[in-house]
Length: 129
Image 1: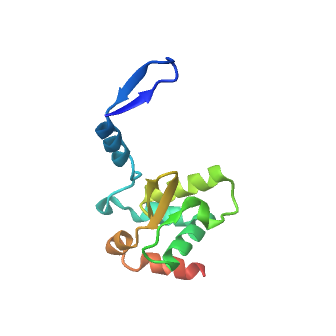
Image 2 (image 1 turned 120 degrees about the horizontal axis):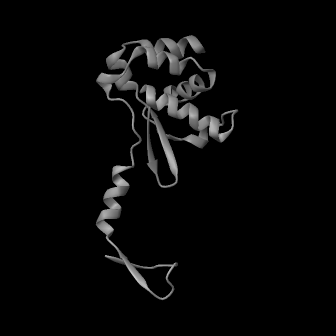
Image 3 (image 1 turned 90 degrees about the vertical axis):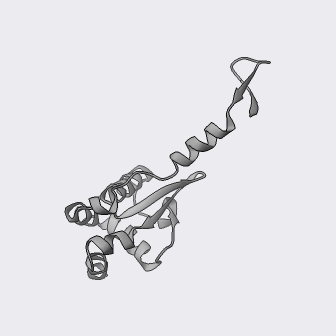
């Protein structure tokens, strides 16, 4: 148990259940996305159809297994627009994201995509170069 001073009631203390805080944090760590068996080729191709999103995927494809912070891509768009692009990629199942402190780390779901659609990712990324 942790005792925290409550700023709204000066001089009074409130208690926080530490185990509950840790459980809530780990539950929200991974951002939602489709399971491997729910990936749809239409969604993946539509997500890869935008030049900014394709740039993100190409950079992740070039470094297998790496996780990168969203701000490390140097995208030529505003932060809100970049967030939109990452969300589209995540919801299509192209990337996985999780929260690590104050950052969102992004990783290409290469194994899942290759298992569902063999050769698709390599073809699309190769055609873009």
